[in-house]
Amino acid sequence: MEENAYLHVDGGTLKLIDEKMPPQEELLDLAEFFKVFGDGTRLKILYVLLAAEMCVYDIAMVLGMSQSAISHQLRVLKQMDLVKNRREGKTIFYSLADSHIVTILSQGLDHIEE
Image (cartoon, rainbow, N blue to C red):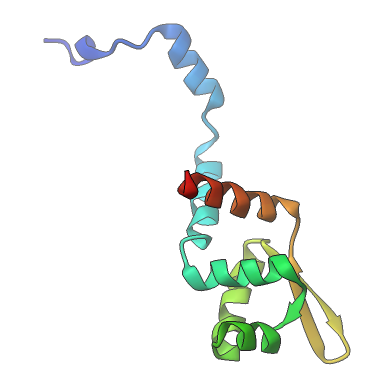
């Protein structure tokens, strides 16, 4: 029997899939992006920053964690452009990078609560 004997997808559907499929590099970047959301501590930090801009010390106090643990996770979040920071004197304040992050968190939560 021929290898494609069980392929029942018509040419139009295959063309549509091909048009919609992002390039391989973008798929890999998207996978890395979603991996960031696979860590509970990072999600907690994002939810803290959803409420207010905060420094590492305050985030650590709110979450009951060490400043070094928070700093490490903030570095990952910053590398993925999920958070941004600003300096005020010696203190660095962190906030969500943009409204897309709020949407992602909100839609993710909506999905699992259904």
